[in-house]
Length: 285
Ligand SMILES: *[C@@H]1O[C@H](CO)[C@@H](O)[C@H](O)[C@H]1NC(C)=O
Ligand SMILES: *[C@@H]1O[C@H](CO)[C@@H](O)[C@H](O)[C@H]1NC(C)=O
Ligand SMILES: *[C@@H]1O[C@H](CO)[C@@H](O)[C@H](O)[C@H]1NC(C)=O
Ligand SMILES: *[C@@H]1O[C@H](CO)[C@@H](O)[C@H](O)[C@H]1NC(C)=O
Ligand SMILES: *[C@@H]1O[C@H](CO)[C@@H](O)[C@H](O)[C@H]1NC(C)=O
Ligand SMILES: *[C@@H]1O[C@H](CO)[C@@H](O)[C@H](O)[C@H]1NC(C)=O
Ligand SMILES: *[C@@H]1O[C@H](CO)[C@@H](O)[C@H](O)[C@H]1NC(C)=O
Image (cartoon, rainbow, N blue to C red):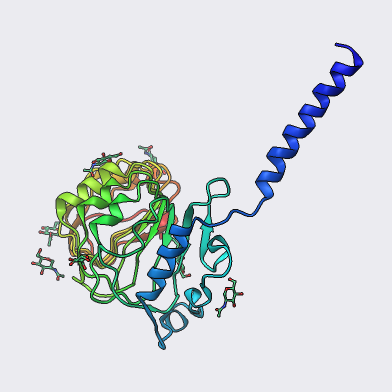
């Protein structure tokens, strides 16, 4: 290669680098259909005057959707995050946003099919059921619908969300949400990437099935009406840090010290009112 050829190659390399680099810092305009869907979603709600989060979490609520308007890129709206390359909305964080209204199967939330993280916790969707359409968010990794007054049956489609790392559906009141025993089993069978599962206060009325996600760190199943024997496999989950089985008085545990040896990661164990027939190891308090 002579000097001329070399400089041409260097120039090309420089131009390619510039092209890739500058396109990655270009602001990504939100596709129109997405901003339309988000604004429609915003319009289905009124803003609450009661700050549940301030009262319960000591974390002040504020209406994130209030500043959403047609001017500007929806990827920059409060609570919205887009994929840097495609511009698709991949995250919606609207926990503690004072939303009051109903989310049904026609909600303009569902066209946002690229969502990976959705947090709608601590709002007031009283009168809403969890739509089977939530099961169509095939890229979802984090779903938090907890303590937002959803009611009724949790749809079996939830177990289609096989990429989920976190699933939070806990409620405030007993028997407001129900999960069929066979759906509970397919959730735990299919969601093999789960790290955190919170189903507190949901009426499950089931035995505890085998759990297939070895990634589980947090399992909250207090007040769910579980019964039967706590399966041995729970003792072998290598990463389990928090296990909450509080107030399931039909649940029988046999806790010989040796079984807890394999649960070295455990830092929190909730067994109030569980019918246990052996002592817990002293190391667990
Ligand atoms: C409209 O959106 C822009 C940018 O997101 C924001 O600065 C402005 O306050 C909004 N206007 C209203 C009336 O909310
Ligand atoms: C959802 O939002 C609430 C309120 O901001 C927050 O407390 C909670 O931790 C969030 N959930 C997740 C899974 O991050
Ligand atoms: C959805 O919209 C269609 C037509 O607009 C309507 O017939 C149907 O009842 C709506 N479904 C729900 C759950 O609101
Ligand atoms: C389990 O997940 C796969 C996708 O990974 C899906 O096709 C299947 O229907 C799911 N099974 C259940 C019982 O939800
Ligand atoms: C849970 O649901 C069953 C019916 O599926 C019902 O018999 C039971 O009373 C419910 N439990 C609670 C605590 O409401
Ligand atoms: C609690 O455990 C004892 C044996 O340890 C058993 O006899 C009893 O039936 C159990 N109670 C329930 C509600 O399962
Ligand atoms: C569990 O630990 C105890 C001492 O802490 C030991 O005697 C016992 O052999 C261990 N059991 C297993 C199954 O490793």
